[in-house]
Length: 217
Image (cartoon, rainbow, N blue to C red; front, side):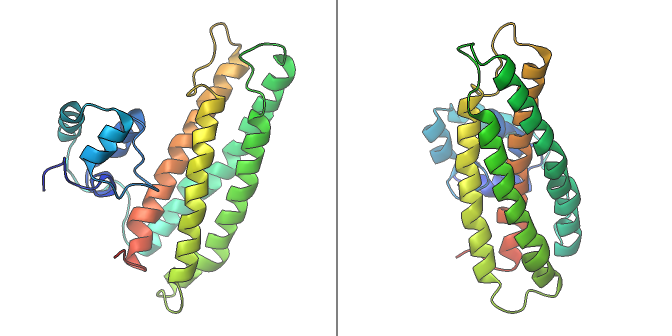
């Protein structure tokens, strides 16, 4: 299938490195990855031929992460759940510091600390649902009404996607103002990493793990 007509999520799954390309062009490959590449590129104003050429330069080699449920769940827990728990509190601390010290400056990201704190609280609740209910169900073979909790997790991923859009707005696309202090620059780098990690995290669940138990129509 030509890349132009392939679904964004399928390209993200089958072509290692594609997710980095999509992030660079702000093409959503996790929650809204069911769009053909041409449609997604047009929505973002990205020149399609150049995007296809960039993707074709990537190696179509095997997945860099496991796809079988048990090792994939372990990867998600170690690489994403625990990392989010380590990195969100530090980002919140830096945001509070920047807002306190630079509150008089026009470029100060007022509301960023509160936004990050809200994201982290809701994310922690989401992750605990997965760890205590959904993932054990999957590891037990996926018996029962597993489609309902999967649908709920995917709906919550949609909310995270909206929160990430707001995060980019508050940080001017993770670009600190000229002359920003070290903490301010480190804060925006931390926010950009949170954005990248959360999008990769949701992509692995929405497009690799969940379809193995609740296939999409």
